Image 1 (cartoon, rainbow, N blue to C red):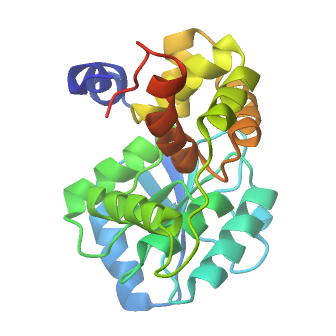
Image 2 (cartoon, rainbow, N blue to C red):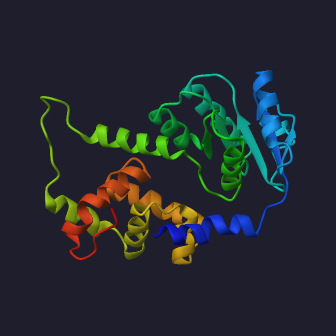
Length: 252
């Protein structure tokens, strides 16, 4: 998908159709950091509300009626952040979760994404950019800084490379044929769009399907191609689609 198409389908609607005020809860025990984020959000659509450290269901931001955002800026390990996000999503399924943390390695951000993270913002982001990132999150997109996204891709690629002295076990071409043959026509369409970096929302719009339906298809795709996540599935398709289905190469 071209950059112009992404702009027209994702960025432009945000500018043309702004959403209502967003009830926002800070999960942060550092008063200085809380004050800084409060200043950044001042005058924006993100209206701060008090939150609890344990039972998120008691927070005013935990509502199925109004759009809600939780900003997690506690100091802690990636595992602790993942557990916090897991509890939040269990108690407030419709709420969005953004982590503001420094020195987060790409593999750590990948762990948080698997836990349900909607956005990651380094604390050195410009205030305006941070607000825009949160607006994208509230529109259903997942925000990860470009530098971190590249790092996440490198982590996946490194995991696929054989260690020095290790035996290389390459999948034969017939295995790729077998895996592609398991995919339905719809799953093949979704996988091609996935290799172009399209989000679930954009894929759903492109194919005229519900976003929930795309998620169901993605789970089936991961199982059929033997991938653990959408990044691995896209990389597998980049390597094998042209060999298995000549003339249908995916974008690189």
